[in-house]
Amino acid sequence: MDPSARAIWSVPAGEALVFDRTDFRPGGRDEYRCGPIDSLPFHGVVDYLHIASSALIVHTDTVTTNGDLLAAALLTWEFTDDHDGYTTVKVTNQVTSFVGDSMIEGHRNGHLKALSQLEDFVLFNRTEPRT
Image (cartoon, rainbow, N blue to C red; front, side):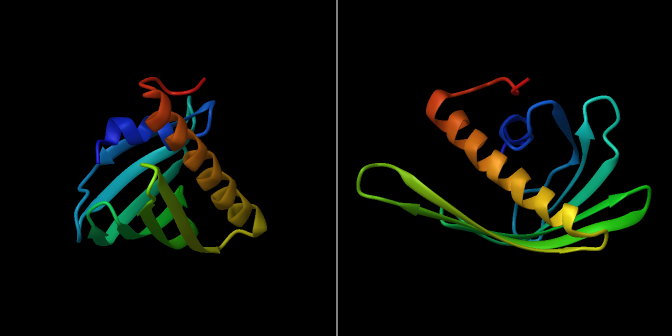
């Protein structure tokens, strides 16, 4: 999975994501920084547990800032093709926040925005981040 493409569709408008390391494979790890474009205060680690080509991705996502653990999550991305040539994407996001409910809501909203932007990226072949 191309990290430059993910940096386009997976980040809310007005924010940025920089991958410091990517290894998209079972047992692989991504390391990233994200947040406001001018500071990127959040650090994340994604560990890929299972990848079934074009069908299923299971990974963990741990987010920290200044060395403090903010959240840990287990995510499942399921891809189902229908008979009309479309793919349905279902994300199950089991997240634990160590800093309160706002982190849970941020995780939810972030994934909803990412899914919407992924749809735009695929349908309209977007090649630039939203601003």
